[in-house]
Amino acid sequence: MVCASTAVAESPAQSFASTYNNIGRTGNDTAGLQITLTSDAEQVKASQVCALWNAAALDPRDEGRMELALTNSFAVAAAFAPCEATPDARPCRLSYGTIDPSAQQMIAFARVISDGAFAALLIDVVVHPAFRMHGVGKGLVTLLMKNCIRKGASGCVVFAPRERMFFWKCGFRWSNRYRVMSLPEKLQSPDSDAELKSSAA
Image 1: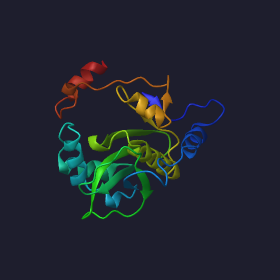
Image 2 (image 1 turned 60 degrees about the vertical axis):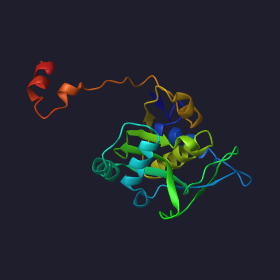
Image 3 (image 1 turned 180 degrees about the vertical axis):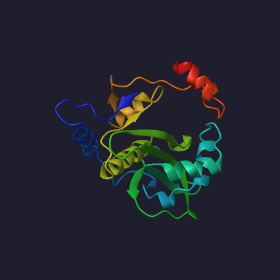
């Protein structure tokens, strides 16, 4: 796991904020294809996220459950490109604005779950294969992290076994404070009370 706050002299909230306030906007005025970023949850639809998930060849997700996940998320962000557009060799030009669903397609998505104070987890970061390596993912994560800071999150962690270099470029650093444990599938069923009591004995 990597963590967005590592500075020793600052509090977690100060370190988290300074990390992302120092990351500039990806792209410039001479960059390529125009990409629109948004952190407005009303503009992010479950059907679009599921379609992006399929395009990225990830495990299919149920649209109804994705709708519930979006509703319960602390913050979300998405990137949109003109329909049928593909990037060229230059970094994409990122801007922030209103999305036109009839003319734009979702090409990247990420969300954060959090208590709004002490703990936040960045999850479900996905970029359409055709738009990777063009600065879209970094721009999206930066927008999402800044939005989390404004909403009061004091720090954020991310599970990054394979994409650790990407998250390093986004400002995350290794943390020795966290170790990952997961609940076995057999204990996640509605009938697992007895097994949970047995394992706790």
